[in-house]
Amino acid sequence: MLKLISLILIICIIVFLIFYKKEYIFNKLKTKKNLSRPTIKDNGKSQLKEFKLNLNNSYLNNINNFSNRKKSILRKEMLDLFKGSKEEKIKALKIAEFLSDKSILPILKIGLKDMDSDIVKVSAKLIQKFK
Image (cartoon, rainbow, N blue to C red; front, side):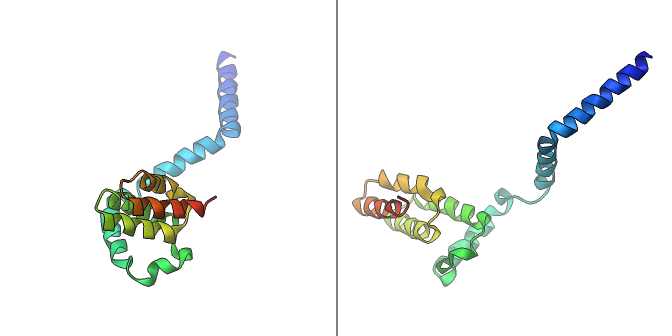
């Protein structure tokens, strides 16, 4: 009798977890599947080189060509360019102008804090587009 009650209790707990926590369980299963795929960290450097080559081309002219992954790679490159000279910072701001996405606002705020007045002006002009 005790075995039957414990078995019924275990089944009820499992049904409860499946019914109320199914989204959590499925999300955990999806993340485990995504871990086996190559990530941006693995292929990021080669992709950054590819995008550096395409920056001067007309690749940036069409915003619909960007996927979320490409946007994140370009944001990383913008952060790297902001660590460099004035010309590199201006190049990063040109990329930001083409992306025109709200995810670049933190990078533009870094540009507002820069010592060079030209970079501050361009950053302020790009931030005004989002107001």
